[in-house]
Image 1 (spheres, rainbow, N blue to C red):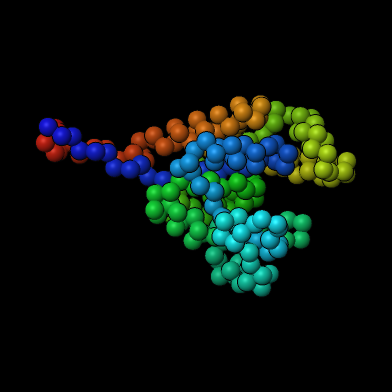
Image 2: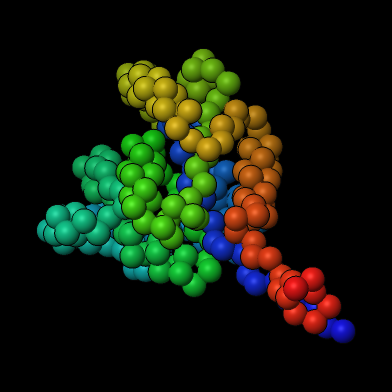
Length: 217
């Protein structure tokens, strides 16, 4: 007597935000390496390609005019300007992956996370897939120490980043999960646990056919 196989679980859209310096990019890279079923959403940018970057693998490289056209047409789930260049995540890019059953990772800022939540409110596919995680240090003092340790920012820039972090921390209750950062490895394991648990959420895993041979129907 053969039992009916389970259908594939519904996909997860895992969104991770954090204040600058908390380490989310490194943690997300570690998660992607450990979970091959999870793919990074390829974002658009108006900055020129750097050495070794490829169109469609690292970014979609758009002219400022093309980027603005797509903004006006409402094609982005979220977009922002960073250091004079524009970045954004296309709704079609995320939906295309989710529709094929692909789990998707979004590594974006708090403002972008709010835009994605708003988009998901009237999009059933995004709403069912979305899981949001806020990663932060145990204190602003610890965040300042990490920012200083990077040795890439001036003291004035660090103070500006900390001021932004204070406002971002106020948005932490809007997220599904809050991760207080420890080591990078601890953070990766905790994020991986969230991802794996969400894959097993009952709303995502279809029940087997209970009415078939040997079932209860």
